Image (tube, helix red, strand yellow):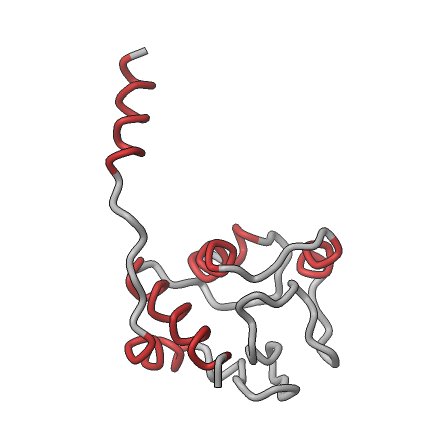
Length: 124
């Protein structure tokens, strides 16, 4: 019982998610730009990330997604902050079977910054 209470206390006491900085996210995005473009319809090895925040999973025309992402899209999943955070932290864990070869971003601040950057770019 003590273990359960300690775990609950740790979860309640955990810090809030970091607030992202789009300018710093531009630097983090350099890790993505080899495979992804921010231009609409400009797919590379990976799909365009143009307006990804709020977009349904596996919804870019002209890109052939893995079965894992197609299934997520068919389930109605959407790229929101939480899903992007989970995916960018560990793509293969978030969607087993994904073809994304990037190992992931391990720093909470990098995750927050890249999501802020993707949001800012989507508003342009």
